[in-house]
Image (spheres, one colour):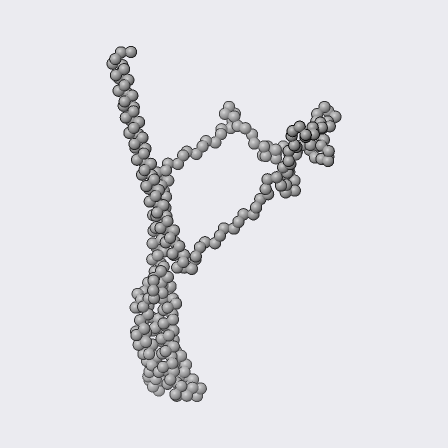
Length: 295
């Protein structure tokens, strides 16, 4: 071999060495990127789990119910007593002091009797006899490459980058659903699309209207002599307006409070007091005007 051939071979080896170093450096950088992506995804999943725990506590679910335990199966060495199942028997002792096993009696055809020839095991065959169809299903058959059957191929190894990308997309989808759940949790059950002020006005006005219906019933009862004038005036001026005000206050506190809002939302007490103590007397005045107009 000439010097030029040695030099060409040396250059080829040097190029292969540099290519191997570059490949190793690229593989090392790829592994670092994969580890960084895994750490970041782990942090996101941990934050999502904590946020889901907060949402669960907000709706009254502390932790998921435990999964039912699977029934314990029969342990090795213990028979169940079912047909076709054998128990694991201890092996005979070996050594100088162990008695030698006596040969089993034959069947008369020059062959040993197997388990049927053992004392105390009369009528028990060495191998259970199965029908031909069940035997074909129960016994595995070896598949040779030369035969007609083709062995199943192994599944291709999953690419870590592809799996991480799928996990990242699922985490993004979980974040989107979590934000939607938080938006829903920030809305109260009563009139969720209304503003707090409009909701309070509607609740106090509704309670005042219900009290106005009770005022009309009291007026009718007073007309037939069941309620005197002092009782009627006391309920119209103070009793029913106070009942309507506290009713609206309790309704706003029970169904007008979002699940994820810290603290107590505003209930607009002066506005509710004004509405309730105006609606009930106005309902009574409207009744009087209607009666006088009909006369």
